[in-house]
Amino acid sequence: MEILAKKPLYLTEFGIYAGTPSSSVPMAAPPAGPGPDKTQTNLPNVSEDTQAALYFKDSILAFANGANLVFIDLIGPDGGLIGSSMVFNTDGQPRLFLTTLKMIESKIGGFSKVEKMADGQYKFTVNNKTIYALWSGTLPSEISGQVKVTRH
Image (cartoon, rainbow, N blue to C red; front, side, top):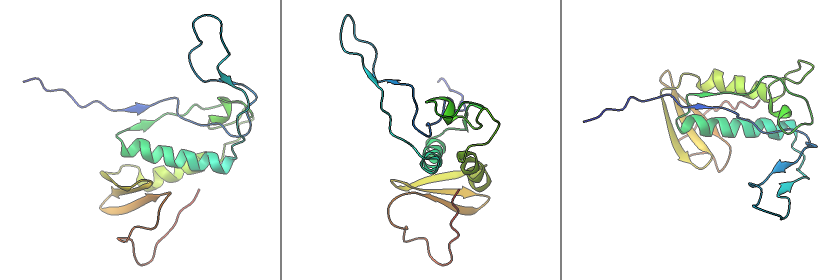
């Protein structure tokens, strides 16, 4: 019987842009031979609040599905497809989503258990305390009494 060691799962190249990038995004591998250019040039504007909310949702999904660590690039220019998904701009100013990532670490860092309750609803166990990460649906019925809501 072969026993496989459990390996850690790291998520790299993690992020989404903010603003309206001026660069285009390849949508598929180039076709063989002549054909239309498969790029999307008019990307929608993504506010920093929306970017932070997406980092929250995607980080929770990553950790709930077994990721041990999420890597985000450090410095990039504003207004770029890739650069604006990095933690700091080229002036050294942190982007709003850094606050979101710090909040996630402070609330569920070192969790011992996670359960999916419904789409957009996860329950983490941290030091025998329950922490909920919710972004859609109605408040689960098991949550009652005084609730502390944390938003980036």
